[in-house]
Length: 477
Image (cartoon, rainbow, N blue to C red; front, side):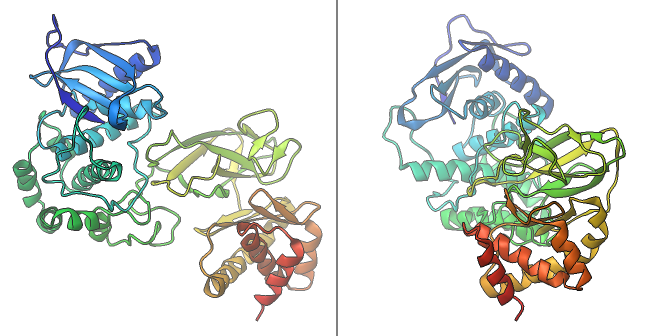
C-alpha cells in the first residue's frame, strides 16, 4: 500500500500505451492489465510506466501488503504483493493506480490512489473490491498534513497509527471528491496541499469546513473523518447532506445515507434477512436474474440470492439456497420473489448492498411488504389479503419492543403459510391454521406480538417457542 522511489530498471523506457505486466501468476498479470485500462478510462490519460512492469509475490517486511516501485521520473516499474495476501486483488489495483499519482505528500498520494483505485474497481465489475475500510474510529490517526510513514527496512510506527493514517487519507480524498471533481484531484501525477487548499477554497462553505478540519490536526481530522455508522460517508459529509453519522439510514427509507443506486434497485439488508422486490412469478413460474453491487469496502462484489416466498422441495431457509445448486434461478408459479444477502455481513463491514432482479414471467406482487425494519409476505398466496393488515401491526409492535427492550439488532422477516409455526433460518413462519384462527378472532395483534417476540429471542440465541409466547404476552401490556 506504499510506493517507493528506486533506480531505473536497465533498458526500460517510457511506455507509449499500456505496459506489459509480467508475473508468475497469469491472474495477477491479467488483473493489472485490466486495472490499467480502467485507470485510463477513469482519468482520461495514460499512466506513467516503463514498457514492462513486473509483479513480484514476496514476503514484505513490516507487514506491508503491497509496494509500488517508481523510478526517479515517477514511472511504475515493479509491484510487490504479499505472498499470502488474501487481499491481493485490491492491493494490485491500488498499486497500479500509482502509475497516475506518485508524487507529493504521502497522505495526498495514498488518498488519491485510493480514490482512483475505487474508480478502477467499479469499472472492473467485481474483479476487485473497493479499497478496504472497516469503519474504525481512527483513534491512532496522526496529523495527515505532516504524516510521513516509515518505509520498508526502516523502524515502523505502531500498526494502528499506520493503518489509521492510510484509512484517514482515503476518507479525506473521498470526502473531498464529493465537492471537488475527482478529475481535478488526479489530473497530474502529483497533488500538494497548496493545490488542494485552492481547490477547496473554491467550494464555498463546504470547502471551508473541510479546510478547517484539516487545519486542526489529527484530532479535528479524526472527528471529521469518522464513520460511526459504517455507511461509507464521513461525519463531515453527513453534516453536509443533513444526515446523522449515528444512523446508517437516517431517514428510515431502507437506503443507506448517501446511496446512489441504479434505477429499480433494492437496498439489501446486511443482516441476511429477505426483502421484497415487488415482483412475483406468473402462472408458469419465472426465471430470475439477480444483479448486485454496492459500496462494501475490502470485500468482493456482494452476493445476493433470490428466494421464493414458499418452501418448495429443495429450498433451505437456513442457507438461502436450493439443495444441489448454488443459486436460485427459478421461482415457482404464484410465489413472491424476494432477495437476500447470501450470508450476513460481519460486524466491521463498512458500506452497503443493492440488487436488481429481472426475468421472464415476473408480474406485480401484492403479497409482500418491506420496510427498513420488517418484511412480511404470504408464503401461501391465499393469505395475501392478510399481509396489508398484519404488516403495520408488526411494525407498531416492533417499535414498542424497541422502547421497552432497546433497539433490535436485526430486522424481522415473517412468512405466512405452511403447516408449521417456528423459525427457519432468520424467518419467523406462521402456519396457515394459526393465521386463519387469528383472522377469525380478529386477533392479528397477537400474531404480530408473537412474531416480534420470536425474532427477539432468536437474535439472543433462544429459539424456545414457549419463551416467545411468554414474551409476546408481556408485550400486550
